[in-house]
Length: 236
Image 1 (cartoon, rainbow, N blue to C red):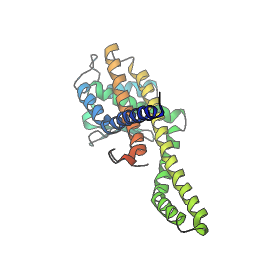
Image 2 (image 1 turned 120 degrees about the vertical axis):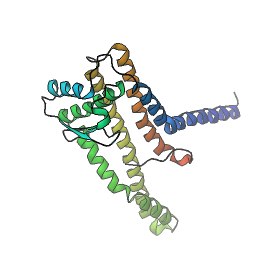
Image 3 (image 1 turned 30 degrees about the vertical axis):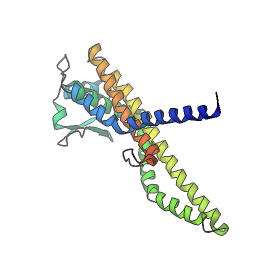
Image 4 (image 1 turned 90 degrees about the vertical axis):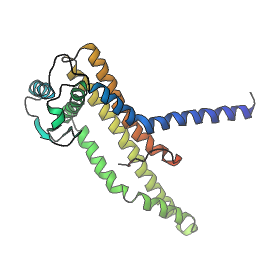
């Protein structure tokens, strides 16, 4: 095979891979929302509501130490600092989507009592947001200094290095988030397996995988920002 054909094949392979990654980056959230709407219409066969499910997990796993707070914000279900926040719509729901989402948040609560994963992530996010303000300044100033001559070359190189370091920190932060979300989903499945049928559990697993794919999409949007056709995403 000639060198020309090798180059052509490599270019085609790169273009196909790029299109695949861009599809994940741009359409994963839409896929997740479609899946959410599908399983939100499915009531679990046991008839158990979200609050009943939480009460049992809170008793058996957290010894009733987890505080449950009701909020009006739609899709505001979340965990933080020993508190589980439930939207008015979710708290009395018995849909498969609601129980799966809450089980995932309970997975974060379990992470919180097992170690410092969430605390490390929170620290890195605060650090990243602080450093993120100086990222454009470092890159722009560094490039300018590189072109001003040898007297400023080293300083420019250092500033560019700092900028690249901040960018790599952002990527690491995204990967850490994905790892934490995957672990929370694994814990969610453990919580759910005693309350769902096998069919419901399979749907819950697919739903959690689609949710995790949105975090991969966030990671890819940062890497593919140079294309100009990827949706925008915050560094931190």
